[in-house]
Length: 297
Image (cartoon, rainbow, N blue to C red):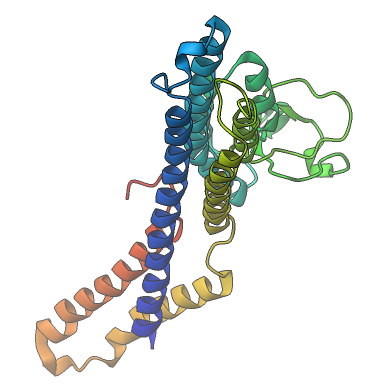
């Protein structure tokens, strides 16, 4: 029974891994298709290029630059959001090492944005800092902070546990704070706005081409939502507890049922190898449960 349960769990976690791979490929291919379509339909080798002026040339080049940089920013934001969602699903106090990795991704995203866009992303990132507090230690009090927290899509205005927290980036305006917003969704909206600029322009493309780009943007958005759900909705906790409980029960009780006449092989080597194999199933399942994690595997 324990073996079947562990193998079934490994199979479920492996399916999550394969699904995550498919969603990542779908999202990146959709973004690449948008970039290719914009660069192809506004190509410099078009028949109308001879009638373009300097302004049309500049607008065409700027459109390609904006689309490429935002598409790359969305791809980086997928990894940034996976880190944020993992921290949001974990303990209340976030490890500084994990925050540093997320901040490194945020810096990469900001390097692809304008100053105004970067401010919007900073306010939507969902990183918060709690003021340092004095905590009793032996005969004195030492500061315990500042501590870092992640908040995604929550209203923090009346939350007691959110008192004393402030945004890590940007200034609180004293109004209602709804927490962080998924950064890929914000960047997709920015990209969608730039794709609207060249409609029916001499240097742009007809309105019917927007349906093609919108289809790929919708595919990228669905892939992002699927990846987000894989992280925010892990395996059911009772199922995990049952799996670990049965494994511990088997490891502790199996040696009691072994016949001593089987010698060192049947009493020592075989039980150890069997327990190691079952524990390996459990470890592999833990590693694959979050297919977008930062663990060494």
